[in-house]
Length: 85
Image 1 (cartoon, helix red, strand yellow):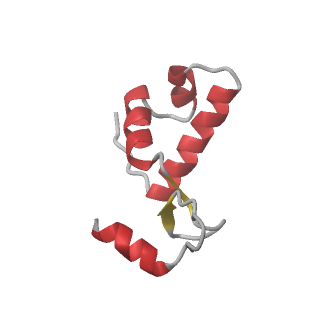
Image 2 (image 1 turned 90 degrees about the horizontal axis):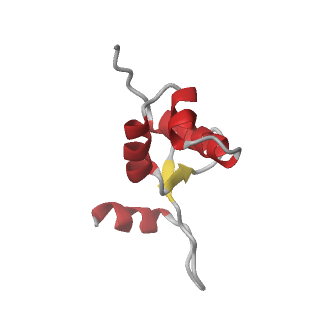
């Protein structure tokens, strides 16, 4: 079987597709097979990319989920601090 390399944006979109199928009542195995990946790949991607989302539609940047508290903003300095951890 040929191994395909996916970009992070494609992986996030595929994870969202699987979630839609699962919410419609499909099992994890069925949902992952529908989008052309194995169940093991789904779980690995979910562990690695599950907390990420696209910054804006059409944007190439990916940011982790961020829920700002009082007085916090989503700023580039926050991203730099998170990347250095």
